[in-house]
Image 1 (cartoon, rainbow, N blue to C red):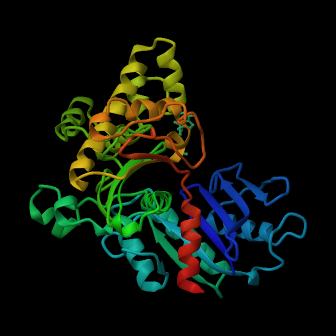
Image 2: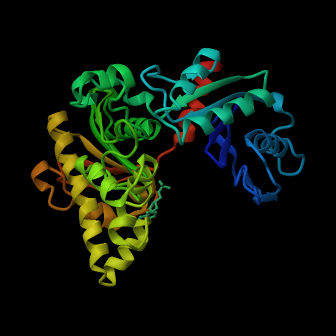
Image 3: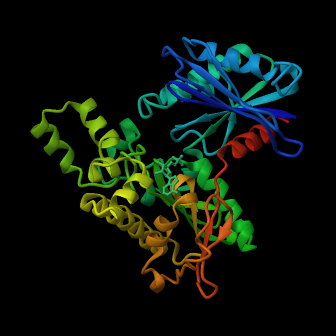
Length: 397
Ligand code: AMP
């Protein structure tokens, strides 16, 4: 069976076709600038040259129509007709408290995705647009929703409740949800395989360090805690997000700068983090380069970044009562050699000791811990699309 994996954002649609007989990826593609003049589709079929198509696409349905046309194209398509695609799996960011696993989408599921618009206003509406466009164009197959929040639903109240008046939770469902769940799920399972231990017996700390970044503490197959919270703003310092701050700063700055809530949202989500602190860029490569060239703000920004991560490593060590391995993944985690080295520096007291020579790798699955390190340090490239394809297959085969 072949599965179409869809990740629809506000102005983009990423897709893959995965053949579940051997999990090979037959095609990957990206539709960009959906609803904005100058839309493009970039399609890369397995073993063939990439194709770029320029065509204005006013909405997600038009974008998906073009994707399906491309998939069956006799020259660069990857299936003879759409009947070869047995199911479609969709990334959905927020499933609230309703889903601890992926699910076949029906009207009730769509209703919950819609109910979460309020708490995921940037992600769930385009996710649902992508689903509805696909359902219209592929009415004969099942569609599966794979939620970023689902893996974290094993957290217990002491790990997900905020110390706010209880009605904030009862009325508005304000609690820690956590995100990047599909990535934490994938790399933690791979880590257990590399440890050679049953997943249910492992203590794992996963570090998903991309432009957005989060960590998770996983014990006996369950997420104990994760660093993102009610929204992806909480936790680590990110490309443009502040991560943890004193919440009083929000209302202080709203008053001083005359910001309304939308402007404040933008300030802490889009203008802060490494970009705001360094004044250089949200891209860690640029910040590192500037720091090397002597830029003092960039140097401080990097230290603040490491400091936040080390704080969470200590926190999660305590909550797991020890740890078998750290797992680095996503853009920075997979490729940032000096970033990983600095994060793991001075953690010997926790039994974390890196082999700096082994650490000189990018984008490969490898153990970079010193032989005598008590804690393994894995670099594991994430593969959220494969998790979506596997879940879709499991629920529809
Ligand atoms: P992602 O969101 O997972 O695609 O990660 C993107 C981020 O990875 C970029 O913004 C960069 O900051 C970071 N990145 C990619 N390559 C490197 C590298 N070699 N060193 C440090 N950071 C990197």
